[in-house]
Structures are given as structure tokens and as C-alpha cells.
Image 1 (cartoon, chains in turn green, red):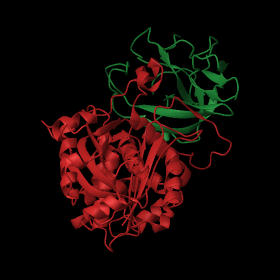
Image 2 (cartoon, helix red, strand yellow):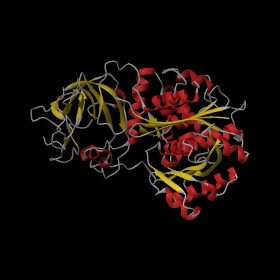
Image 3 (spheres, chains in turn red, orange):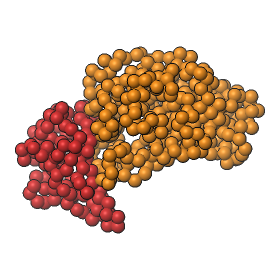
Image 4 (cartoon, chains in turn cyan, brown):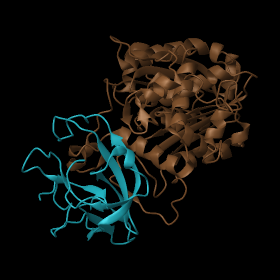
Length: 136
Length: 387
């Protein structure tokens, strides 16, 4: 699994997201800024849905680098308890079943599922969903 | 300086699409209209602040208006650019340095969603590559959280949009002036849940100019005094939720809305004006999407969080209601030329205070008027006018 950028996921299996902890205040942000004042920390794998929307149109390219063919996806804000709320996709769920407060688990998914070597992007799935990532 | 800063002239180039006319041209049009309204000539103008986000440098308009050597400062401040230009202009008069000046804003955006690149916002490239560099996602996620906390329905979002188009029928400067039924609004395609296409404003074109004067100068000009009792511009507090946010702080008590620049700017405006929300007769609140109007009613102190549905049920924000909101259809019906949008709100408030609103005039001769803009990444500007 190749992440879309360096320093986003840990090297373990399954990977975790990497946040940045302010060395002075302890505040955690995502992604980890490339600054000496932030220390990379592995974020928790499970959290709850803080808010969301559904992206219903293909974003402009550039900067969007996803496939030409477009299918709507859930844009999620996931609260990782005691750490930070991160923005990522939410896969493997029907749009009508998405609810603020639902339990979700980190499961990166390919930006372009049609490509064997597609880079992986930050994503979550409902805790009740099977382990494999991928688009809903 | 003694007395208040007064608005003595207003001008507007209609919002929407005007092919063949540049953004600067629309700004010049508005300035000329405002000068005529105030009964002054360009050479009398001592200074100008101009705002534009995407249509070139405002100071270039001296080519058209006259090379008088006037001081002309350009302002860029996201969606609060117009409000920031007005704030700066009133400070120039308050300082005692000048007696007469212009705040002008214009813009001309390409069709479609605003096209933002990660590097312009200090974000990594991947954030755009995965499809998250989209402003509508933020606005939708903000209202989705708010709806879950305070039980606001999608129908209420539709009612806000319906009112906007209904009010705009009577606003000659508005873009979308046809009424749209609540049913059509709710059944239109979703852009970003819970918002359908009628619930988001569109980038647009337009120009607005305001002539500001010291109270002494305003009396000399013989104009009815529209006093600028407060103009504030503020930035965001810690842990706020803003556009293009890859992460948001976890807070100990997350059962209410987050702090915002709007709440700070609003509280300071009331303090400066010596007024409270109950003293306001008409308000223009940033409504780049339908839910923003509802959230901003609370952020500006007009109602408690969660009271909005009752306000709508009682028609309190209608033209004839207790607090008419967005009497010209707001951003939803006028579109959003960024540099001009905040000044349009003040233009509309002056129209209302003068009693010139025609079919959209707030009854009962309103005496006070409030305006509020919000922009990325957490800037807000508020004004309070009194006649």
C-alpha cells in the first residue's frame, strides 16, 4: 500500500494515520507539519463521525487527481478521542446510513480503484464493515 | 473627529453576469452612481479603499475616474474584503485625517465553483488531489453538524432559499429574480448534502460603492444622516471549524457550536454601537448557503441556537417580520462577487433606512440596520447603521 504522500500513514499493517503533536502545547493536528515544533504521532485507528457531507460533483482538475469517471463519496470529519478530528473519506456505507456519532475505523482506500498501483488516501469505514477498504 | 462617520452616497452595478464589462468597469459604474447620489465630484474625494479578489487592482480605476492623485488603497481579505474596505475607510475619517472618501468593491469570477489550489492555503498538494479542495464540502459539513446538534431540518434550509428568491423579485440589483417554490428547491439535485443547488450561492459579478463622510461634511452636503455606529473586522478564535481544514481541534465540551470570528466581530459591534440584537430593525447576514443564514442568526446574537425553526414558522425573518433578514435576497439571489458582496449588504441597508426599498421595503420606517460577512479562513466583518 503506497500512501498518496510521504508521512501520512505508519509503516505497520494495518497502517495508522500520522498526526503532528505540538511539542510545546500538546495540540495535535493533521497532517503533521514539516516543522521542528511538531512531533509525528500515530493517531488512533477508531473514532466517531463528527460531521460529514456527500461530494456530489467531480471536483475541478487540477487539483483533483481522481479518475475521470465520477461517483459521489462521503467526506467525513472523524473525531479520534482525545486527539484530533480529521477529514477523510468514509467508504463502505450507503449515504442514507451515515449518521453523526457513528463508530468508524481507519481503512485507507485507493484514489483510483481501477488502477493496480493507485496511491492510497486517508479513509474510514463503519466499524461494522468488513476489513477491506475500497469505494462504497 | 466629533460625531459619527456617515454614508452619504451609494451606488451599485447589478450583480450576476454582465458580459463585455470588466470587474473594474462595474466598480467605476458604482462609484459614479454613488458620487451622483451624494452630490459630489470625484476631485473632492480625498481617499479610497477598494476591494477585489479576482478582477484586478481597484486603484487602476483612477484612469477612468480622474488622475487627481487621490490616495487609493487596495484590500484583499477573502469574502470579508468589502467589509474590510469599509472598515478601513471609516477609520480614515475617524482618525480626523479626512472628511470624504470612497469604499468600493467589485469582482468578476469565472463560472462554476471557486477554483482554489492547496499551495495558496498552506496545504499539501495531496489535499487537493484527493478532492477535498472544495469549499462546498466545508459549508455542508458545518451545517450537518449544526443540524445534528440543534435539530434543524432540511426543509428549513429550503425555506431560507425560498425567501431569498422571493425577496429578490423586488431588488433591481439582484441576479436571480424569479421566485422558486419550496418543493422545487428541496427536490433539486444535491450539490453537497444536505444542500441542493438552490441552497448555495454562485460566484458572480458586480460592483458597489459607498461615499463616506464625517458628520460635519455630511451636514454640509445636506444629506440625511445615515450613521455608521459600528464597523468591526475580526479573525477566528482557537478551535474554530473553517473551510479547507484537514483537521479540527478536539474540545472538552463539544455539545454547542464552536467559537467563530463572527461571534467576536458581532459582540464588538454591539458594544461600539451601544446596542443589542433587540435594537436592530433589519439585518443582512452572510448567506453563501442557506444554512449560513440560520447559523449566523445565532452567531450574531439574534436568536439562540436551535430557535431558528420557530423563527421561520413565525415568519420573523420575512420583510414584514420582527427582524427581516436579507431583504434583497442576499448572496443566494445576488450571487457572490467576493470584493463587492459585503458592501452590497451595506448598500441594501442604506436603501432600507432611506425608505427606498419599493416592493421589498421593510415597513415601519426602520431606524437601525445590521450587516455581517464571513470569509475564509475565519474572517468576519460587521456593521451597524442608524438613521
